[in-house]
Length: 380
Ligand SMILES: [Zn+2]
Image 1 (cartoon, helix red, strand yellow):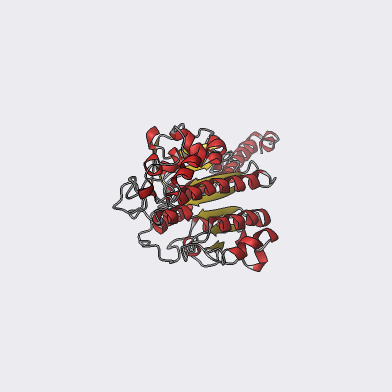
Image 2 (tube, rainbow, N blue to C red):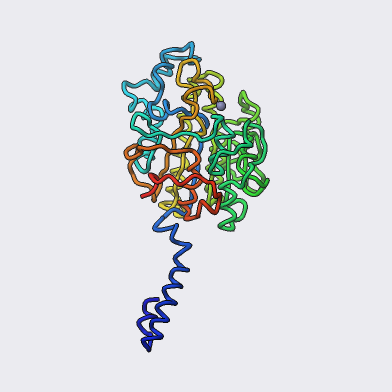
């Protein structure tokens, strides 16, 4: 464009060219401006249901490790051997070695109140579907007041990304442990690929690596009718990631919450540790792929907190203090490598959708004019 201006034969024509060139440049750069210098082309969203700040930032909770009656742990001695360490920092590294040893160092982790970082849900209910609705739409949804499987009341961030980039259905995918995600992830049924709860993978997408888990989910059942083992979800998810190479991928794990409700702290820690292993598996797949490596951002969070005490840690609701407290991590090529440093401030679950859209260079106000703003701390 500049060379065109220089070659203008006459002064007046030169000015005209200059004006036209300037206008054209504005037109061309305007839609790209939001994108800036961002390197992200792919986003992987991972949620883990009801994993408390206590465990994420401090590892196994001493109050519960030393109280088998209130923790419900069947083998306290073994549990202590696995997860007890002298300091919270060592305990969290024992519970979540990949998260703290690798991921946190390559991104930001928000929500450690001891450091003045406050991450909360914005909905008034403090349980799952209202939380996921907030994540999916960028604001609390007044009509979502229960965990009933009703379709998302608004277009979800998954559907929006698929629509804006004109993607085939399977390029936006959600693989989830809880069956209600078939409703949570889409306003229009079938607009994205979703496999959730005890649900077989359609033959078209079944890979040899998925077959054992796809079959086992119906035989190795859980205590719950709507939640399959996270191992099944992760195994299918990791295979799907490799075979379909989605542009936007969502993996929703759930066992931490359900074992919490059952008052089995030993199983909660086991599930939290498996969540860490899941992150390692997904990250290894992403880093081993030329398509994804260096171009993928990972957004990880929980949908709600739970009680702080040895009595109410099992549950969460508007009446149980601690239930609104969450944590959010963002890792990727556009996020500063600051870990918990520089995470001071107040953050909301509602900001996750806009953060993802900004990573893609998309305008969150076009998605939802009432959408909360992107998390500034997640960007360089
Ligand atoms: Zn719950």
